[in-house]
Amino acid sequence: MSERENNIAYIDGQNLYMGTAKSDPKWIVDLARFRTYLRQKYNVDNAYYYLGYVQEGANIEKLYETIQKAGFILVFREHNSAMLGKKKGNVDADIIFSIMKRLYLKEEFDKVVLVSGDGDYKMLVDFLIGQAKFEKILFPNRRYRSSLYKSIGIEHFAYLDDAGTKKKIQK
Image (cartoon, rainbow, N blue to C red; front, side, top):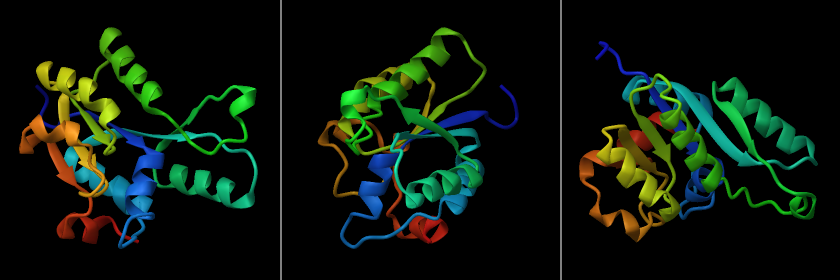
């Protein structure tokens, strides 16, 4: 194994936003600080930020630009034409497929860091732990962490709303 790990992060953008900016009390993640945190704490070289694509509005373009300037690789969830007006990202399947594809193609990386509290990733997390390809799942906040994760060991998860972590990544 190399001296420094080459980990990959997958961020469920909607889940991160809802777990922080829409929580009580609400708080905002500084994306540039968060990207630095992922690099320094978890040796994340590439961080993929998944969102549902919304076309309209100057604010949404500013958000996309902010995410990219912070150093994230922005990945949009494709929607069929009937879904274009909807705002929900629903990126779970895309994230799971991307990780499984990397494993199948035997791409060079050490472990996965996942940012979400969504229980839809539980089967993936269990599989990655079994394959020694899982670093951590970072829950945006304690309150909205899926109960499905009760069985994973503390070494496999952390909370972004912990005081120390929040201080490092809060805007």
